[in-house]
Image (cartoon, rainbow, N blue to C red; front, side, top):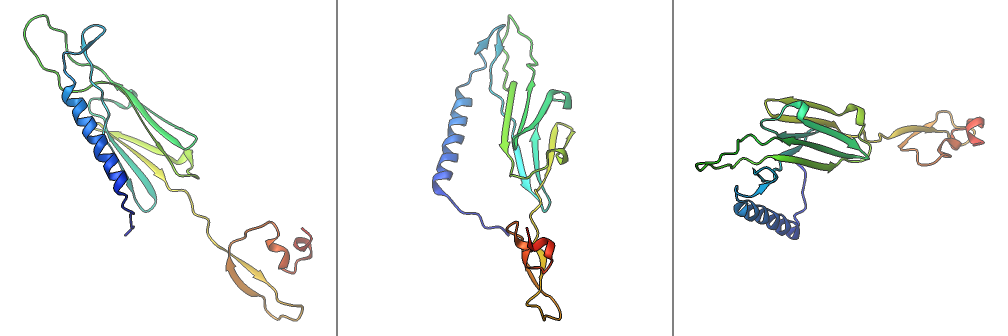
Length: 180
């Protein structure tokens, strides 16, 4: 179980953002028009990010879209998902109708940890849910280095650790590596 540090100021910021989003959607009226009389509503698809043992798994709900409507880009450790959901209603001259479903262009970005291999990122789209699997970067594993102690040592002693400099092999007794 991972421990997560609680930051009250961050929680307040999150609450403020949610309240702003709620008030913005409350006062967005479907009567607002742009261009040819289409309703303008900002659409931000919801996304979940889950960490498993070997992957980060990102799931985005994109109802009404196909895989051709979605763009996924990975540049400088920033993963960007973008696309557009078209407006699906007709303009009417008479009568009253209500449009609540948001449409339009969207883009969501998140920064990936250093060391992620861009070629190993996989995306799968099924029934309006986009799933992106991002393998975690490999952690550097410790390496065993044998060191002989003195000229009369019968067996080399093994010390566990990581190689931290270019001269780490200088004490192996190997005349070639000692001269580096």
